[in-house]
Amino acid sequence: MSSTLDDPARSADSADALVERAGYQPELRRSLKFFSMFAIAFSIISITTGIFLNYSFGLTNWGPASIWTWPIVGVGNLAIALVVAELGTRIPLAGYAYQWSARLVNPTYGWFVGFAGLLYMAVGGGAIMLEVASPLLLSEFGISTPSPRLVLSVAVILMLLPVVINIISIQVAARVNNVAVFTEIIGTVVFGVLLLVLWGLHAKPTPYGGSILTSTTSIVHNPTWYAFALAGLLGAFTLVGFELAADMSEDAVNPVRSVPRGVIWAVFLSAVLGMVALIGFTVAIPSLKSVESSPLPLLTIASYWLPGWLVKVFIAFVVFSMFAILVVGSGAQARLCYSLARDNMVPFSKWLRRVNPRSQTPVIALLVFGVIDLAVMWYGYLQASAFGTLVGATAIIPYIIYFLITIAYAVKRRAADAIPGAFTLGRWAWPVIGFVLAYTFLIMLVLSLPAAFHGADKVLGYGAILAALWYFGGLLRRLRRGTAGVKPVDDLVE
Image (tube, rainbow, N blue to C red):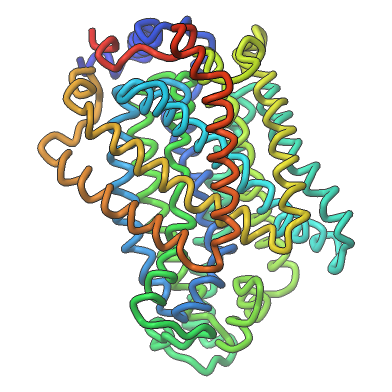
């Protein structure tokens, strides 16, 4: 078994054999090795983007001490990563959440989980580009107060470029993500450590010592337990998306080994490096009042300590990290759509499942969802708070998916465990599954009940209505006729 996993040619043959047992002909080009799979998971987590966008949320609700909720969430999300790793090594098919849920439970269950995956990838990128990346990029060129239309125009360009990159080839997209690994580390960790050193050397005066790391002084005053829960969303917003590496399984040279290793290492390193960066930025706070009231507190902190040109470099790394998220998201979204289409689960499946023979990429799916993502961004543009509406929805959807796929795995773990894989939880499986179910349920409550997230709840409601309309309006008929759906997980066992 180990020799098969270690030999790239034999492992590729084995992976393709599983694709064929699943009922498909291998069509996607297997070119992504371990580092590329790790880069996909690491860059979609994007500690640079997550901390840059959500640091303010933690400060507002529980002050600088909010950073200590990060390692707690890191442990919880690492447990989720273990479940994803075990599933990814046994069912290494494009369309991760849909494939796992449909084969472990049934195609109906798989459809709603798969639709949640499509919605997840559609709602967040537009908000980030519109609200943050576009204005930051314009500020690099000296445009500090751009018109809303200019911001929208740049955001549209930033949304379209990842589609073009993925159409060219998955290898080009992989190169962008490989570079993003280093920009993530430089853009967050190196700058965080630099600020920590400058603070330690007293390069500039600050009124705080190390005690600021335990300060709970905040703008919003809530009961301690509630403030702590909201502060935890600093990590919960950020340490997600790693499962998209599993969505690229049919592009991987050795998915049975590279997917679990890539996912686990990405979550572990993101949690550790993110904590280092958070400590550096927090001790360097020059004025708690001004930083807590700033919409982009990391920029306020960096501007105090660093010369203007270096702040611009920091912004460039942040923008590139945000852009890399879209490159990963566009490719993963198209493969989820492709996976659904080849099982005739979506409208116009005949077209959406087509793969370009030259680039071996699902070009039509990439183009269609490129347009859909722009439409969702336009919806956010018309809202009073595009960021709260769309990013809030982006935060909760992955936890809904984690919860649902973990339930599916609990139902049929014994059958799935009969499929050979390179990673197994063994006797720890059921404790991990129980913990993940409780943990994700708690996160879903925290991300849906507060009034700040009610706009995001509406997006979820609209998504559920769309999924139900297609299910009862067309898909159910296909499933009853046997012209849609997948084989059960038992058929994947050799």
